[in-house]
Amino acid sequence: MDAQNSTQTPEIYELVRKVMECYGANSYRIIIYNPNPCCGEKLTLVSSGDVDKDTEEYIGKMLNEVWNTYSKALPEPQLIDMVDILVNTIATKFSFHFLTLYDGHHVAWVIYKK
Image (tube, rainbow, N blue to C red; front, side):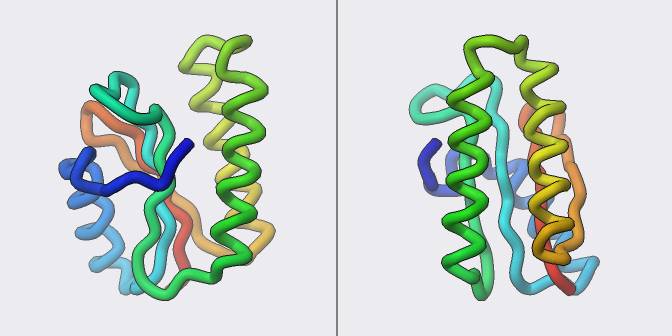
């Protein structure tokens, strides 16, 4: 998993930006799942606003562990469910809000504070 440029997934990034603007959230982390990447990874971590580096590293480490452990053993729908549970757990641990968005192509898990 690499932190990649958000321009690789502009539709979902724009959807997240608009939703976060409506929610009044200035700082958020997005985990984007791209089922058919032309290049790069299927799972991308993107941050916006004031990001706590410790939280960022923790999220990245946990996602890498889950993805690397289960990506070859589970079908993608179950893997997506597993990431959904992990992101929700991380959000709860750090007292963040959490939501999942889908633009028809990508899944985005968003962790944010108001």
